[in-house]
Image 1: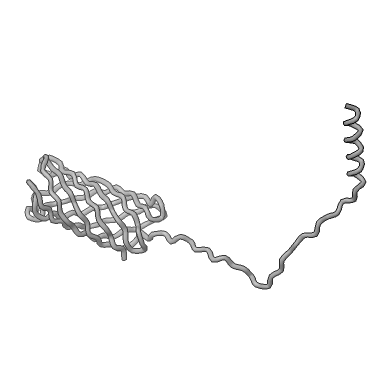
Image 2: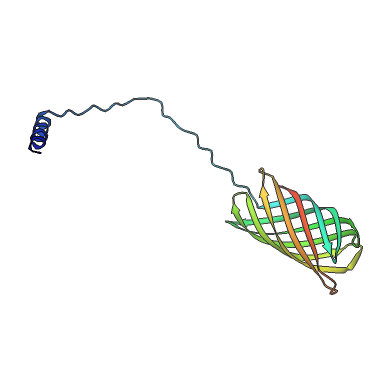
Amino acid sequence: MRIIIRYATAVALCLACVPSQAAETIGLSSNAQAEVPVAAPSAFDWSGFYAGIYGVAESDSGNGAVGLGVQAGVNAQFDFYLVGADVAVQGLDGAGSGGADGQLLGRAGLVVTDNVLVYAAGGYGLALNNPNDGAGLLGGGLEVGLTDSVSLEGRYLRSFPVDGSAPAQQLTLGANFHF
């Protein structure tokens, strides 16, 4: 053991006697100022007018109908909150329910990410061939911005007829074009 201590002491004394030298820093000089372009992701602008087309599937009391519709509306975005309204007209074809329906909806939601909107919707719908056949509408949806001016939307609505008949369920999937 003594021999190990003697060798360790000898190595320590030898290293203490070696002069230390600082290494020079290496620097590169450049006259040109380098700028890296930073592309900020563009946020989808939910504010403004939109119009769209959609497919619809509706079910009431065991009867089903499918159809197509068009809608137009306006949104206002405040930070990550959104309020809006739209009007829609759709044609349905199926057992028990056919013809054209109109809807007036208000919506309020949250912008979850720059291009994803989650919202609740409520309003009034009526059969255009029988204006006395109306229903309250309540539901919600999800809308995803694909480009600067196009979004995809999925919406679920439940209707509550004012005449007390059975409620219906409606599912729509469509595209909106923002102006």
